[in-house]
View 1 (cartoon, rainbow, N blue to C red):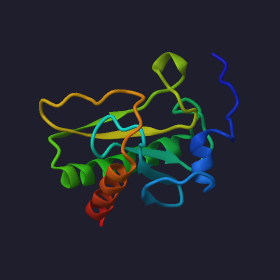
View 2: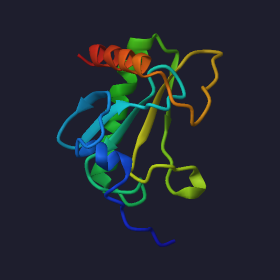
View 3: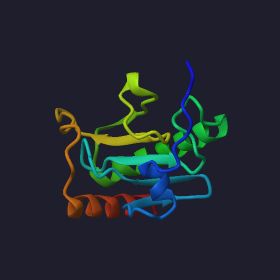
Amino acid sequence: MSTPEYDNDNIFAKILRGEIPCFKVYEDDHVLAFMDIVPRGMGHALVIPKEPCRNMLDASPEAVAHVHKIAQKIALAAIKAFNADGITIQQFSEDASGQKVYHYHVHVVPRHEGKKFGPANVMGDMDAIKANGEKLVEALE
């Protein structure tokens, strides 16, 4: 399988450059975590590396390790912030997996017993997403 080139104009690259706003919940020298504006559940966040890579298949091992380290940190805070019963962690690599944005990212979705995922591809309420981001930031402190 030949991997296409990284597209510097993908939406997450634009977020990293500050060209598109996001509801940031965590940032360090290597990753950025922010709220998904198409949430599958309350508190749905994304963790992305600052390293330009399409997905897990072409990311450096260091980027993969750090993204997942921070995904765990976000997951633990989300359990606290949203009184969640569990967490779903998802990562999609290439078309066949369902990947839509070609910058490596991990979904962190708080889950509640008996509650199904929300619908895919439905824009969330920005005020609710912002409020959920603030809850997550508070739980991270």
